Amino acid sequence: MSITYQGSNNRMSQVTIHRDTVYLAGQVAVDASAGMRGQTEQILAGIDALLAEAGTAKDHLLSATIWVTDMSEFNEMNAAWDAWVAPGRPPVRACVEAKLAKPEWKVEIMVVAALPGA
Picture 1 (cartoon, helix red, strand yellow):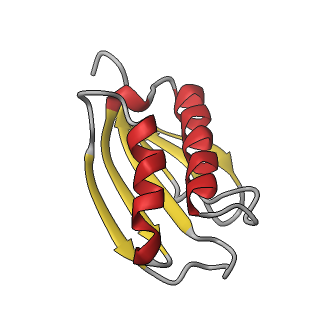
Picture 2 (cartoon, helix red, strand yellow):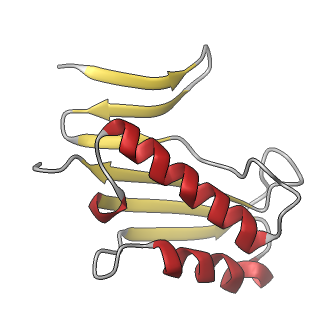
């Protein structure tokens, strides 16, 4: 059984691939000064890039877990998500309110995707 690790350091990997499944670490915004929608858009662009490096794309998403720091901003996150997710191919999804590792982060997203042809 082979497992591929990408974007790794001593603590974690950004991507792990096992068989036909791609697992991404939780992604956060690079520019945390942005609002909820802006941070979400940054994260989704980063997810696109990581999925492409792994050989897949958002139209192969299986699941997503989303953590937001304030549910009163839920609609802003959803506006970015709805504009991004592949039409007719939304993954299963959970979204919860949580305190994130840095106070300036408003949202963190982790996804799992299938490799094409799987």
